[in-house]
Length: 177
Image 1 (tube, rainbow, N blue to C red):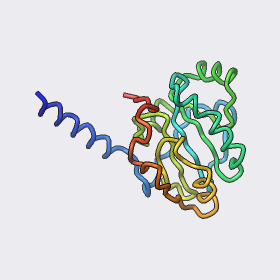
Image 2: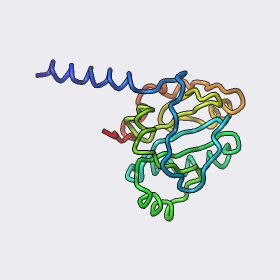
Image 3: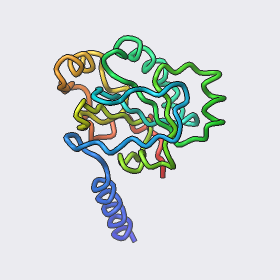
Image 4: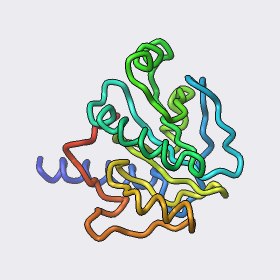
């Protein structure tokens, strides 16, 4: 039985890595059913694309941090917070919670699926050419890394930060499946 479970886990991880987007990949199209606060111009812009949900405690804890980053760097980096939830749920949430990012409703989960997101919160930095430059938990991305990314288009690895392909904060992620 242990061998069957181990094989199942191995195939599940292999399947996840085959579908997940990696650094250096062309980012899939962002499919938006509805923009909740405004629609940004995305052409030729560097993007910070975050996947989140109102029911996700760690996602909600990230909002003040992301609002601060957006206030500091929003002129050079377009912040998008993408969710699969209904417009009614998001409207109620936004009445009580200020979000500086452009809040988008994923079109039937197409963006989430095409990016291979399995845990939230999860974010991607996407350059002007539409290539993924970074992926991971939004709380692990430092201001220094964002400043460098805006200035040079490169992400400098933080030795104390897990790689983008690792799960940096197991206890701060919610699975979507």
